[in-house]
Length: 389
Image (cartoon, rainbow, N blue to C red; front, side):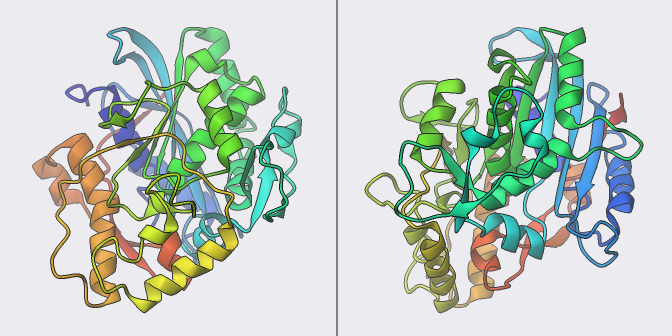
């Protein structure tokens, strides 16, 4: 990956976390399979912790992963400031199956006070966060996040790889003790794009990782919380000022405005255009009944609580066909291309022949149609190279 800049390398690692998402096996077997798939990503990158695969029922042999994540290490990664640092990238997978859709993506009807849960020290986050109902009476001064994302975050913070008792926070603390100048980058796409800034926030609030050592690089993430959370995150993780464009930006959500996923779960069109209401007609009129129903369901759950993190927009190279899609199958294929292909083309450019040969189609549920039990197809990431560190 030496020909790629730092943002491109991080993005490739983000997609690598999804390599076994179509496989139905018990979680321990999925971990082994993901470790094998991450067997050689490039000479510069090694797996230093994980991978970990979490499932609601660990031994269920007929379900895909719930969440998956790992840490990759590069002993000298050149950043956009021209300096090189030892770097650890925490890569978090996106939505995979029915559990993710029902219990994480669409579980925005309950919320968690993240600052009450994530306080200095690691003891607090070893207990699951306690949800409360998302109602209009909640204080706008308190930082709330979606309970679905909070529960996923709890698993990411506490699960350990097979054969190890070291959690992710423990590992990162240990790594920084021996390399105080090391950089930590948290990344993910889609669901992973919501979890990445949340993980960075909790690691900073618990004083696990100094903010100065850490960056968030979410792409295509839905809104994880309310405006108080947005403001708190922006103070801890400052970004470039003003309206941002392009993929080379830290601590903001990289967004394709033609992607439906970043439009969840804001319902305030006076704030910005990334709102649930924009989804039904995003690819033209007339809108489809199944999409309208899904959006209406999410609007009721979300209420007026959610607002997007600051974001940087990319111009989608994927055209929206005309006329508007006539059925759901056609509509979801357009949405798929805007959620996956557009980002890959803008950030990575044209795929190499090897990547084109190794791309696979597999099934992946996404939040908006997923609340109706609909299934999506998404392109996979080529298992090109990671050695164990």
